[in-house]
Length: 62
Image (cartoon, rainbow, N blue to C red; front, side, top):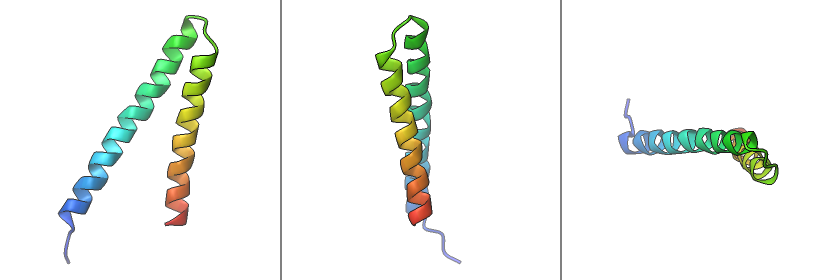
């Protein structure tokens, strides 16, 4: 059995960065929504939904 350590490290790094990035983007949308704005949170939440949808698409296709 051979483990591709570089591939595993790449998947780990991308997952970590995107996971933290999506949570940060969603949290920023919540923080701005709390101040009474509407457009910025809508864009933030739409971007989160698009990223999650793209991730599901990648899993389903590959």
